[in-house]
Length: 196
Image (cartoon, rainbow, N blue to C red; front, side, top):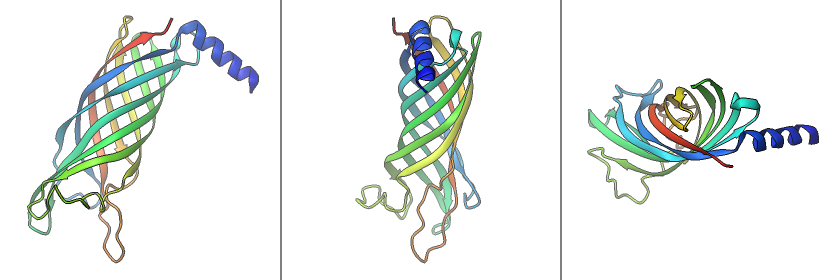
């Protein structure tokens, strides 16, 4: 274990720990058996990135991120037979394995999200209800995978897909659960700086 840590530290020092920012947009929707005619909506995504090289030339690295992400969906509300728009504000923590070949970047890993707030624009719900978060899961477990291109100066572009493994809504007692999860494509720009 000590040897592995020493090699990791040597690689990190030699190649340089990198940090930076990432910003872009989500095209998100709901997916699952009970997603009733969902339609996608756009939302912002932005946050901080760290990159820890694990091999020479930064071929393989570990990349944790901390991102704000607004997700959501349009979906038919069966109670009123009309579209309902729901906006979900998450703080996401992706923990990614990253492979870089030349400028080409491949990345994948798990993601944990925390629901900060939401806006429910249903005709029968008030978005000022102090208990509006109660039917929704505060914690989300999911996954992320993406592809991109990164220039030598640290500027990068990428496309990602992420989806939840947990349902958006909780299951109240004696109520039929609504089984659907978040699903989103992300289009992002990034900039990483090497720590000397």
